[in-house]
Amino acid sequence: NITWFTDSMRESRPVAVETRHLIQVGAFLVVGHEPGGPRFSQYACQRRTTTDNYNVVFTDAFEVLAECYEFNQMDGRCLAFRRAASVLKSLPRGLSSLEETHSLPCLGGHAKAIIGVGSSPKVLSDERYQTLKLFTSVFGVGPKTAEKWYRSGLRSLDHILADQSIQLNHMQQNGFLHYGDISRAVSKAEARALTKAIGETVQAITPDALLALTGGFRRGKEFGHDVDIIFTTLELGMEENLLLAVIKSLEKQGILLYCDYQASTFDLTKLPTHSFEAMDHFAKCFLILRLEASQVEEGLNSPVEDIRGWRAVRVDLVSPPVDRYAFALLGWTGSRQFERDLRRFARKERRMLLDNHGLYDKTKEEFLAAGTEKDIFDHLGLEYMEPWQRNA
Ligand code: DCT
Ligand code: MG
Image (cartoon, rainbow, N blue to C red; front, side):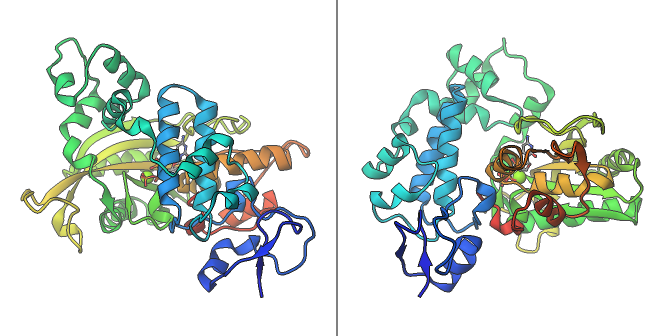
C-alpha cells in the first residue's frame, strides 16, 4: 500500500503505482511519513524525468506556445510554458482529469485552460509561427534574423536563396548547403559511430584523455538534432591544443565539412553567471561532419532513395580544463530545463552560483571543487540523478 502524495498529506490519495513508476518518481514517493511535504518539487532537478512522456499531447502544445512566445521575445511567458511542460513530463502516467493538475506546481491558469479544452494551439496554423519555425530550422539562423526576413515579406527558403539583397554568412551558407541532411534527426547509432570516430581521433593525439557523448543521447534519447561530445586531456592547460589538433585531424581525414571554432575565453577568477542562455567560455567548435554509411551498423537515418552512402551531421565538441570537466559534463548533458532549474535551485535554496565552469558558495565565499557530477549534487544537497532521469 503505497501512497503517492500529490500535494500534501492532507490531500494525499492512493493511486495505482507500478514498479516502473516507483523507479521513475523515486525520491518523491513517500511511504506514510514526512508530514505536509509537497511531493512535486517546483525544481526540475528534484523531479526524476525519463524519456517516457505520458502527457506528450499537452507537453507538445505547451512547447509550441513557449516557442511562439520566444519568437515574440516574451521570455516570462515562454519560460512559464516550458516549466509547465517540464512538470507534466515528470508524471508517471497521463493526466485523466483537470482536477489532477491542481496539486502540481508551475501550472498557471493558461496552461490549465489548455489541458481543460484539450485542443492543439491555434498558433500551429499561424503563418508567422510557421515561417519563423522554418527559417530558424536553418543552421546559423536565429530568431532575430528569421524575424527580419519575415518582415521583409519572405515566406520560404527558396525566397531567401533567390533574394539578391540577402548576404548569408558562412554558417548560414553551410546551413542551406546541408539543409536536407541536418534538418533530419540523428539516430543513436549515428551518434555512437561519430563518438567512436572522435574518440579514436582524440586517442591518437592524447592517450590520457577523458571523453563522453553528452546532450540528449547521454540522457537516453533515441534521436537528436546534433551530437554533443565533451573531451579533455589529463594534462591541465593542454585542452585547447587538443581540440585544435582534433579539428586538424578531422580535416586531414576528409570528413570536416564545416567548422566554427570558438577559442576559450575562460577566466577562472570570474564568478558563475546568472544567465543560463549564455554559452560557456570553454574552447569549443560547431561542426558539420561527413558520416559514411559503412561506419553505422544499423545504417544511416536517410531516405531509401538516397544512394550517396553518406550524410552530413551537426556535431558540437567542447574541451574544458580537466578540473572543470565534471561541471561541463553536467551542463552539456542537459536537458536545458534541468540545467536552468539546477542553477535556480543553487541560487535560491543554497546561496550558491552554478554554471558550466564551477560552483561558488556565497556564504563561505569560496569555489567548491568537484571531480564527478555526484560531487556537485552532494555540494548542493541534492539526491543524485542519473543522466537518463534528467529529461525535464
Ligand atoms: N547547453 C548549455 N548552454 C547553453 C545551451 C545548451 O550548457 N547555452 C547544454 C544543455 C544541453 C546541451 O548543452 C546540448 O544542447 P542541445 O544539443 O541543444 O540539446 P539536446 O538536449 O542535446 O537536444 P537534441 O537532442 O535536440 O540535440
Ligand atoms: Mg544535442
